[in-house]
Image 1 (cartoon, rainbow, N blue to C red):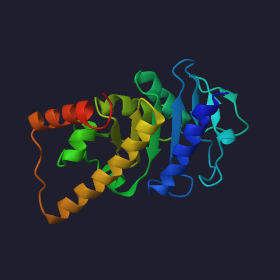
Image 2: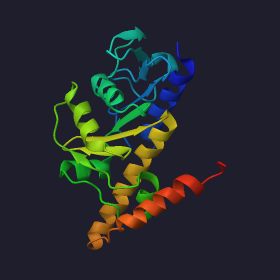
Image 3: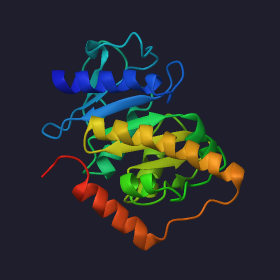
Length: 215
């Protein structure tokens, strides 16, 4: 069932430690099939190195296991609430990447100090309030906080990145950590200079209409 989506979700999960976004078994990637609404998600507590596409668990929108021999991630309820609240999202990635999570530990959003953030996200990375792990509460805070961005922080917790596809969400998760690191380094030198809102909008529009080979 959903072999291609399982493969994409497996490969994206394996990419998280390669990109330095997770340690041990923390963090997870899920992908939603728009046609059926079924969700493929990492199994709970399985090493990223050992993960195979067959290990990826398929659940329905209510969280019931449809296919898979392992237990789904303990964050499954969080992912499902995000999918339910953000109709355009087909992938959710959760990490505890160091620099971005440092901002989350302080309850601080990441302002737009860098053109790369304006290009990719079109605005700041917001930070939501503290929420208890293991249920739907975190998902509700993400939906309430993320706005038009594709990523947000959760106070004292970590990062959630979303996208219309697994590859898009993975790119966002990687970019969030890179942007957080550069912002942190800039803060060691002094007060970074914010990019004006009018420039942010122009940078975002240019990047999403002219960058790359499409068209």
